[in-house]
Image (tube, rainbow, N blue to C red; front, side):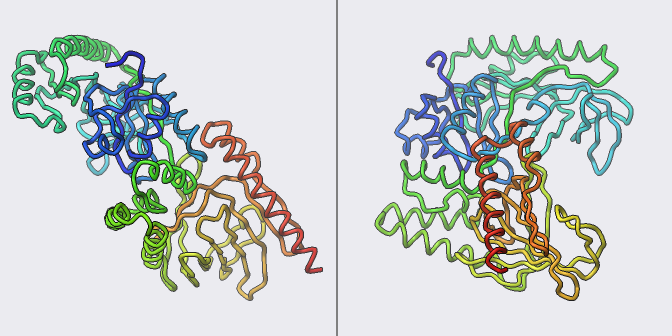
Length: 471
């Protein structure tokens, strides 16, 4: 294995594009699938990765986890080549170990205090009020801890369950048999061993050294925990970052993938839509590989077939209003008009309660309704508010990443800055400081911040000019 070379393992719907990108930055791809290795014309190796990249659960981006310095270089490579990537750093590291206090049990789970936050815990867990060791088992879409403690190395994972396991990626029956016997011989007392993929192609002396090293670390963690009575961090774990690819980033990744293998327009959007549509994409790209001259026709046909089924007149639609920090606000309305794939979507919502309209500070009364006008792939959408008798109360222009229309939902990342318009012609850009805060906290890159500001300025100028023409 080459020294000082970043070894990246990539899994998921973005793997071809990201692996091409990483190779262009001088990284090495390890443990690639046979299909991926053939596509990229690279040697298939089983070296242990120091960075792992895999899909988020909703397929809207990737989780990047590993050693801190290689991780930052990997993240920088993504952000250099793909504009508009949204970045979120969880408040805990993956596989970090905490001493936590069980606060409450519910529905087969528990809530624990780990010092700086409360977190959901999966079994096994102690009685309420008791402290126990907890491992951060997930960070996407939110941190979750487990009562099952383990410590991972390059070749093995040591657990506290006293069992031996071998990675499913190791296919050779002979190698699996050797590792099982080796595990029975080397297994520390009261610990279990899981042999990772890289253990199947390395000198067992290295594996033995790692087992000894990690077993000492596990013993140290257990010994330290015996004297702890309050929630605290016990072991740091692995650095982790969760990224999201809005529509513009998916398109950039489409272009990278297209340089490697025949790729339809919107490939990563479709792959993120779910398995049914992903199968259609695979079929379309199989045809495309044989008839590259049909790229435009195949892409437009696929777009029409998918989008026509997504949003229909009279249907209720869900809007996923995603904040830069990852919080999702769900909005619902009924489709009054849909002219897909190229035309607008008009959504009507009727309000039953009282309140004030966001940004406008105008009273919201029962019977009021809002008309939202959405254009797929546009950087904003407009909502007009009316009273029960049809009097215009104001308009709100939401600035966001290009809008994606998925099966039964509309999704975008809210860029915080907005434009509001009152009936008297007054127009104002609001929430600039919230956009600035999202940039300072590292959620969005500078270029995306500047794009949002330019869109807001353009909308304001267009409204002012329109109002001037109406006078």
